[in-house]
Amino acid sequence: RISSPESLSAKFEGSFAYLTVRDRLPTILTKVIDTLHRNKDNFLKEYGEEGIQAEKRAISFLSKLRNELQTDKPVLALTDGVGDTEAWNEYLSRQQELMDNGELVSWFKSPWLYVECYMYRRIQEALYMNPPMHNFDVFNEGKTQSFFESQLAIKLLCTYLQELITNMENVTEIKLRENFLKLLQVSLWGNKCDLSISAGRDNSQKSSPIDSLPDLQSFILVDDSSMVWSTLVAPQGSGPLGMKHSTVDIILDNAGFELVTDLVLADFLVSAGLAKKIRFHGKSIPWFVSDVTKLDFDWTIRQTMAANHKCMSASGVQWKHFMKEGTWTYHDHPFWTQPHEFCDMEVDAEDLYRTLQTSDLILFKGDLNYRKLTGDRKWAHTVKFNQALRGFQPAPLCSLRTLKADVQVGLKPGQAEGLCSQDSNWMTNGRYAVIQLFSPHRE
Ligand code: F6P
Ligand code: MG
Image 1: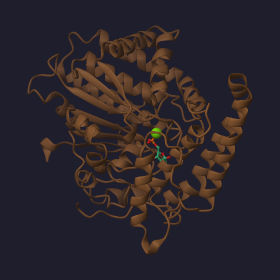
Image 2: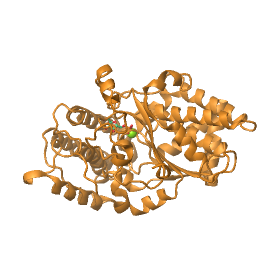
Image 3: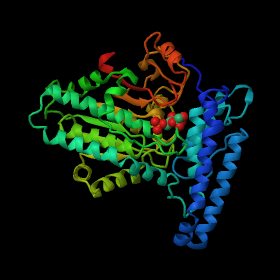
Image 4: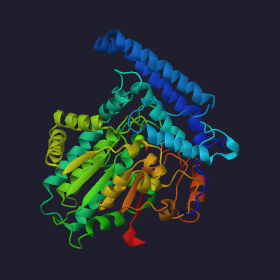
């Protein structure tokens, strides 16, 4: 494998990774503990004394976890024995081998990507070890709240979608392309609304998602959207209208407004005949505060259907129908909630890699997916996206990401320097974004 730069890590004092491990992760753990406290009566009601005991044990497990993190203790092997425990413990051994001078893998010394993923898996361990809590989603309240707080934006977006669909019949290819690019950008900016960067604070969409697009255009640092369009209409070499058999995979990120933007985009792709099948990929456990699980996915469609708003409920009904007839499918491979860089997928999750190879276009939503695509490493900003992928090339793939971590590749010479002089936090404040494509046909 081509040699690659070092991983981002909290060992670099003052870095964003360092600040995250020092400040943001303990805050998130504290909120999780508070959530369990607040739900005490519900546990009592549902499971009686057993529920209370489980809640107490989980809280003490999580307080201990927070202490391990804050005092930079060694990372411990998982003990819950559920599902992917072995894969995690094997990964820990790999990390151990990478340590210098026999030092142990620990919160502030190891790769940030690894320890951050590990924290979410340990939160799950606290629940797995304490039935009847194993199905409790500690982030559920935040996710549902952020959906409700974005209601106005969701209604506007669904209205926009329904208008597009109604006028689809006589639409020209130029218009179709224009609409596609708009909805791609809406889905891109939807990624602003995650609850991990804000450590759980409200971060919902308040303004009109369509009207704000022109003002946001100059914040897109890499914009390969025209090539994404060509990729979508090219595979069968025919025109775009109603002739495609393409499968598009959407690797989802956050629930709330962002998920709605993804569903709207997916609806448009199918309704415009640009894709025959959409495969959504979500998380099998609660993850990075706001990421989509199957429950969130189903809940969002149900809520949209039940809305007291014509265009919103029409959208929800259509989405339910797509799921029922199998035009849309939902998948949650455990690999998405493991710490691996995506270049490991072909070996460590071969079945998933094979599935993605059958895709015509894979859309990777969000920051964490970008970190995993590029391995969360200290790449020079001008390194090609292709190189940072280190062989992860199952099919044409595109990252739709607002920048919330200090990794960014594929910029023009001088571009990063220019940004630095204008806005020193450009890589982490979520104001900038990329639509970055890798396509094997274009290399
Ligand atoms: O550090 C910001 C952060 O919490 C990262 O840990 C993570 O990459 C990101 O936010 C989550 O963002 P997204 O939901 O876009 O993946
Ligand atoms: Mg997320």
